[in-house]
Length: 413
Image (cartoon, rainbow, N blue to C red):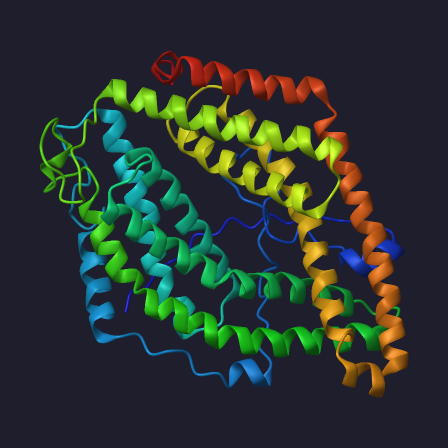
């Protein structure tokens, strides 16, 4: 078993929202944690409140899948070989840029495998969130090392990493929803308290059902094995495939030169930024949840790539990250309200619920209407943000300059 210390940055945000909006929004910081922080672009959106731990009798009685013995032993070997335990992650034959990319990938993989036991054995919302973020970041770095078309072995391993992350997506949604409902019910004066309590009970029951299935999927994915094999694909000590013309154990030759690094940064940034711009333009004309959702995903992909660029200290990357996180916050909060509405509609659509608790269903319908009003306000805030041409153009010009001449920008870092 790995004993993992989680270093979490907690950002307390006051949210003096009006009473009508507070009932839906819960006077919370942005729910999924990606509040832009002007001084620290490495911070994600704000975490849950300290001490948050939703465990009802149904969930607490759940028995998490037992971690296989081979996974535990692999995890212990991983911890002993991780940086800080005497192993040097750098290959001295590599250009510095690729050595740093390799170390960054290893850092995210280490975090994934260290969090897995906590997710499997407990019911920690923070661990679930952090594992998903670490897996997404690791995937982004590997896409720089192995761009499309990827070798079959790497593609298979990254698909496994993606499945591990997606297995927990519904649990993450319910954690966010429960946090909001708990915040509303924690106030002394809460209108329609009975409706909110019924919603909380429904969410807890659904989460408990989904949790067992999700943890089985995660255990089956065998994250420790994915870690070991992906680690072998990294250009580092003991893996000489990083030398030009030498066969790579993960399926193809690697030409990891400084010029190749610049080319991949250029291609990746150009691709993700153009995709984001296209979605933003489309969202102006087509105001549908599907389009806004794709814009949110495009912003997330751009953010994770620019986080890699920021790790090199490239000038302007900090400001670009702040803008992207602000955009993500608006779209993320909007998405939370969409998920809330869908989950509550599913609840009252049950014929038995309508038959036995019709009056309560009518109260919940009023909450749905208020939720829609607040969702419209968040959409308006998003359009106001992208309508700020000066700020948007500043970030766009930076992205285009870096994509056109990455070597010069990295040289100034």
